[in-house]
Image (cartoon, rainbow, N blue to C red; front, side, top):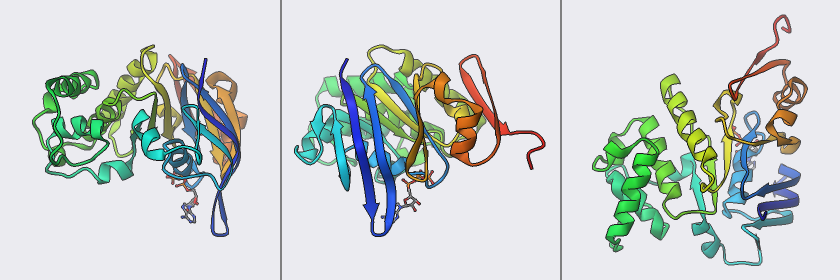
Length: 264
Ligand SMILES: Nc1ncnc2c1ncn2[C@@H]1O[C@H](COP(=O)(O)OP(=O)(O)OP(=O)(O)O)[C@@H](O)[C@H]1O
C-alpha cells in the first residue's frame, strides 16, 4: 500500500501565529479520512497543504509520493480533486453545469476556448449521474441550490480521475435533507474500491459518511488524535477536541454527539 499523504512534523506559521504545529499524519490509498475540529483548528490550512496550494513553514510534506518543495506544484495539482468554498466562489454563475465539470480536465474554472472531446463530455455526464445530479447538465451554476452545487463540485473533483480527493466542508449550508442525501452519496463513493483516497473536512460528527475509515482530530493547530474511527471517536477524545463534555453514540455506521446532560 502506498501513502498518498505523508506529513512529518509539519508546521505552518503566518507572522506570529502558528496555524499548524508539528503535524504527523499518513493517508494510505485505500483509506477514507475525516478531519474534525472546532472553528479555527487549522482544518482548511491542512487542506491547503494537502492540495499543494501552500508549502509547510517547516517539516516534510509528501503528496502522492512527491515531496512538496522539490516538485512542480502545477504538475501535482491535477492529480488531486479538491472542493471547497474558495473553489466554488471562482466558478462563474453563468457557466453551464456540463462545462463546470468538463473544464476540470484543463484545471480551469470558467470555460474559454479549450477543446473537449466527446469522451470528456460523456464522462462529465456519467459523473453527474453518479453524484445524483444527472438532470442538471444544461442548467447554469448560478441557478442551482446549495445542495446541487455541492454535488456538481464533487463531480468536477472526480473529472480528472484524481488519486486523492479533498472535500472541505461539503455539507456546509445544506438543509437536513440535503445533508442526508450528500452523506449517502459520499458513503457510496467511500465504499467504491475504485474511488480515490478521500479526506473530508467537517465540524460535525453527524456528517461522517458510513464507509469512512479513519479520523484526524485537530484543536489549536495540533492533532489531538488520529487513527481508525472506533479508536478516536471516544467521548474523552471528542470532548477534549471540541472543548466541552460530549456524549457520543454510534448507530448503523453514523455518529452523533451532544453536550453531556447536566454538564452546564
Ligand atoms: N494568513 C493568516 N494569518 C494569520 N492567521 C491566519 C491566517 N490564515 C488563517 N489564520 C488563522 O489560523 C487559524 C486556522 O485557520 P483555518 O481556516 O485553517 O481553520 P479551520 O479549522 O478551517 O476553521 P473553520 O472551521 O472556522 O473554517 C485561524 O485562527 C485563522 O484565523
